[in-house]
Image: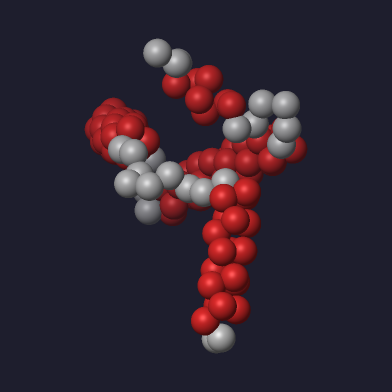
Length: 107
């Protein structure tokens, strides 16, 4: 059985390191901005003292949501499509057959 991390990293292996870096950078920057915005809102509404009490519940809800999304993704990845996608050569042959059939039928 392949470990999950190998499957996630295979699409970036030996190529697209720039996309990997930029996506990680954008996610971290977005989390930083979100954290600053949440802190500003809590200070504005005077909820700073209540937030530490609510944090464990927020974390549990976030982990449950993430776990459910992870399971859905795993189930979706295990489902096989009814027909596999055609290779470039198969597509080329199919197009040429269609073109020949159209020229024979006079369309």
